[in-house]
Image (cartoon, rainbow, N blue to C red; front, side, top):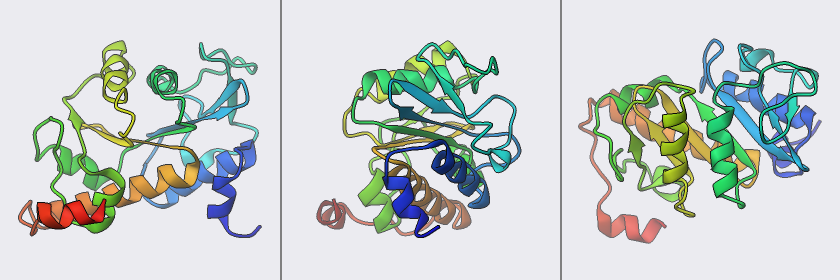
Length: 212
């Protein structure tokens, strides 16, 4: 099959989308039926169905939906699809939206306060891909309030990641590889933060400016 990372950069297909979903599960970025993914697919969108674990996604179970979430199969897309659409509507540069629930990211979100710059810069990769990282206060998953708050955050054209307190992480990209790389870098930084009880040494602003 070749290098999967190259496949994720190429135009999205149901096959590559399904592999990507299963990879998120294998990388422990989601558990159970948590998490959801969507991608532009011509004039439609590919999206994960409601109630199905990302570990079980196959090309046949991937939904192709209109912007209003209507599926040709009559199966409901993820309840977070409205949130995804708010991002797609606001950001023409975004082709993939990835919402995951890494345990260390969720743990870190309970240790810090919502704001525009929340998780301390511990790793160079985190700085390069996602710093500064904003976080929203807790909103009920799937709610209109959450979708609107997410839309407001992603009006910033430079934003590629957003923490949701007690809930998880949203990353966006021009392709699936970019969205995955950002999620893994945030996860690594959050893991180090939690494992050191928030006492890890922080990279200085002088060095941060040289990493961007």
